[in-house]
Amino acid sequence: PQFVDPAHGPVAVQIGLLGGLFIVATLLVFGSITFVAGMLGERLGQSEWAQKILNRIAGTVFLLLAVRLASVDR
Image (tube, rainbow, N blue to C red):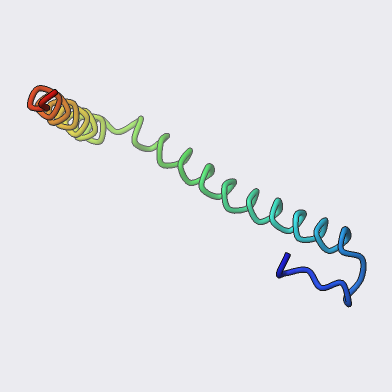
């Protein structure tokens, strides 16, 4: 691969280090997203106003999907 240089040591070790770095970075990014989403979900779940807005948005999306489905030609 282009990011591995045999002159800098064993290729297997380089690939292993890059794979490990990728795993750590992925865990940090997705862990952060999960944490923020959990906090946001908890707050939205407790807010009656937010629930009303989210229900209206979901209803509108379903209505638009139904209109699109009804207007599709075979």
